[in-house]
Amino acid sequence: MSIKAADIMTRAVVTAKPEDTVRVVAKRLAEHGISAVPVCDDAGHVVGMVSEGDLLRPFTKSKMLKRAWWLELLAEGQDLAPEFQDYLRLDGRRARDLMTTPVVTATEGASLNELADLITEKEVKRLPILRDGALVGIVSRADVVRALARGEMS
Image (cartoon, rainbow, N blue to C red; front, side, top):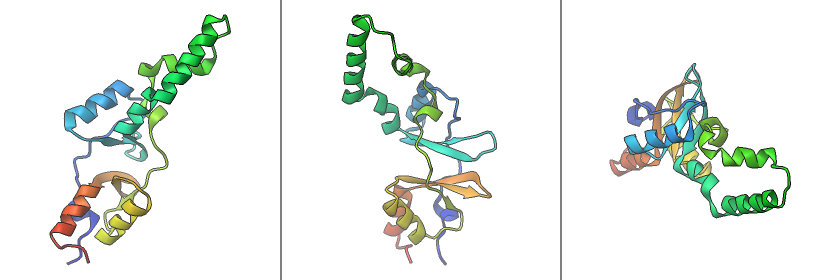
């Protein structure tokens, strides 16, 4: 018997909506002990992925240095640029602003070998699993490794 994505996927997938705030997404990750969520539209189609890394990106040292540069310009009487105004509203950013696109996905019928190939070639940690374009599950690297440990790779 060949193991497929449908056999190892998590079916109760925690998701976010494109309009969810960064705070809502961060809270969802923390509450569920996960490191990323698919971002789905109202029809259940995956439009992006938001990970812990995506949430942290606006707070990196380079972004803080850019903010300091803008503040210096502001102090010298320069007009406040729209980009800086957006930056100052970090807490107002939405999942759609930080999500990674396009999303690497697989179908329920994908074999373990296909899943492993996608994960390694595309350098992703998880694959949303789709049926007719809609999200039905998710497979992580750990799921594939567990299947490998059980000797289920063909």
